[in-house]
Image (cartoon, rainbow, N blue to C red; front, side, top):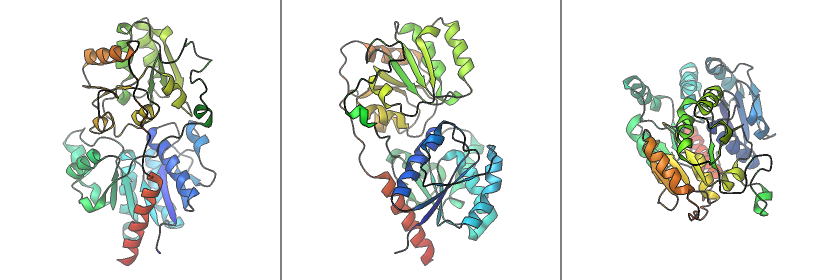
Length: 361
């Protein structure tokens, strides 16, 4: 049987992004199931380096600039001869385009994942999206709604579209044994009395909206798990609003599930998202969510008011009202929703099918 014995993918760096974290979980699963996985990385330093499976073959080019990764990839692919190349998110599609342009028919099949909403941006961005079917042989969306969006914006045939969720983060064994999920190193009196947000400190995530809401939320603390270039600006904002003592910027946290489980509510205030994995993670441990309507997938995850609240992106009053509602003592918490399916196996089935089709053509 023809199969994708060798899978190659790319990362620019390992600074802690959701796209890269999901890729490392997938790659570890592919290795466990007997596939050879090569990861071409601009820079292998960063918080996610600890999540690299020892079975992954890493090709580090020693330059974290995006154009350096794109420039290096065609020669590496030509030399390594993988059966399929996996583009792990929107951010990397220009790298895939350059690969196809340089190698032409010598390029292996390329499958790409939609990791962010495709409806933002102006005419130039929309024109760029319409070029994607020329260099992506297959496209993976993480929910049916995202697949509909991809079909409309990319103009790609449904036969080349697939719906596969990201692999879920697995709770650590100690959590399953019922230990307290409040970190004793933080000034938190007890569980379910604080807000938590998870994501990089970048403009897209709009942590400024959450900080701006804090003066209207009593004395609740806010924990943000993530790192990025907005740290100084967010710290200054908190000081100006006199809430600095209630905000804890914890940087990258390898296992955020305990702090998510201990929170009263998880908040996501982004301008745009793909399928926010952090919402799935919160609901998997029974923590309600308050999220902006930043993606068609948000309402596919928050399917009822018992799970959380979805508010318009620019409505500060709605964000405050939703957070205060869930912070009210005695609110019922959602029943945990455990992830179903086998994303690792679903990707391998797709790759095997792609390689079989390519070999027979």
